[in-house]
Length: 250
Ligand SMILES: NC(=O)c1ccc[n+]([C@@H]2O[C@H](COP(=O)([O-])OP(=O)(O)OC[C@H]3O[C@@H](n4cnc5c(N)ncnc54)[C@H](OP(=O)(O)O)[C@@H]3O)[C@@H](O)[C@H]2O)c1
Image 1 (spheres, protein in one colour):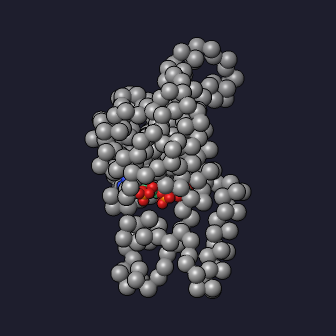
Image 2 (cartoon, protein in one colour):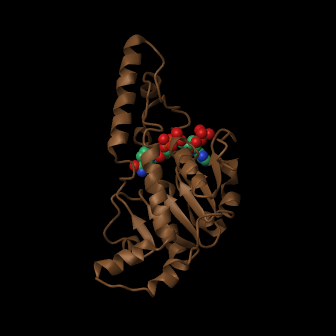
Image 3 (cartoon, helix red, strand yellow):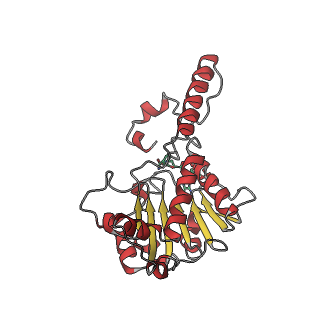
């Protein structure tokens, strides 16, 4: 919906906007968990050694420094359609799951604690893995900045699958370079495409995928089903699915 930013009041008033809320949940959640497990086990280092035909057991000391995910806390920032799918899987891995929402403290029973947006920094101090699953709104733009990374638990993994502009890229790079952030998995970046000159490309503790975490046959099928169902409802004069709150921006 962030691409609709800048529409006039008149354009918004005369139009009902719908989106793909929740449609990508299972696919992006699997992608996010894959990045989390890969970074926790240091797989990028082994992948690099493999590309050079190297059997390097010495890598294991540094590659497994993060330790087991089981028993650690994961903070899901944005417990929506995608966030809940990630939460369910993380809970299944034996992690303590905490989250933030915009409008309510309600959450499913596999989430141990749901806080509001203003608790973000406090909760980030508790979490070994932090996941951006937010929509891009004026409130979430630049949210993951220097102050945020300073307040985050030292040595946390940061994963971003919401929108790139929620993260201040230079501040994330600084946090990775200082070791404040242990590793990052980025499906979304600012800007996109990420420039070839970005230092993120060459960091051994960073996984970058090109805004592709939602790509799957199943996502396409769900998206098509929502679209067709909304056409049917529109013609029948029924309430549409996934109507966007244009005031909130998502
Ligand atoms: N990487 C990709 O390829 C890809 C694909 C699809 C979507 N996305 C991004 O992922 C976003 C989330 O998708 P979704 O389907 O999960 O949407 P959603 O169901 O609308 O969930 C958004 C969640 O974010 C929460 N939220 C909003 N502002 C917040 C704030 N300031 N602090 C804390 N929580 C806040 C909402 O809280 P409430 O529940 O209280 O309203 C809601 O739980 C999308 O908006 C899109 O930008 C990325």
